[in-house]
Length: 100
Image 1 (cartoon, rainbow, N blue to C red):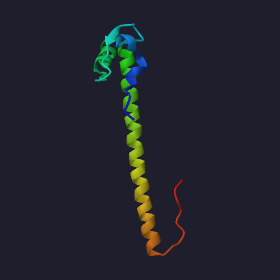
Image 2 (cartoon, helix red, strand yellow):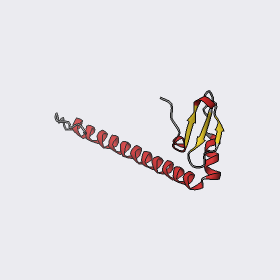
Image 3 (cartoon, rainbow, N blue to C red):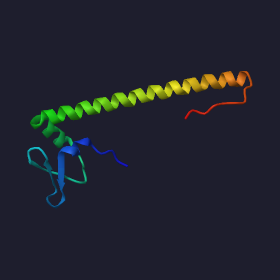
Image 4 (cartoon, one colour):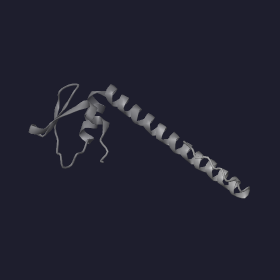
């Protein structure tokens, strides 16, 4: 599934006109469904609705931070699992717990 930009929260597609309309100021922009670029929409938000653009940008940064934290936790879990397996193998334990 292709990634969908969150910029679409601020715009409405008007398929019959091949345009999109800003929900804030009602300005319309041409939209090519084959290219699907959101650059002009992002530029409009940045220049005309700075508060919406900043909110969007802050949300993106927060999501990236959360994803990065999830990755480091996963690496730690793998490291712990490897240590447990080495200990279990050396001492010939037969009970190995599975992480939920």
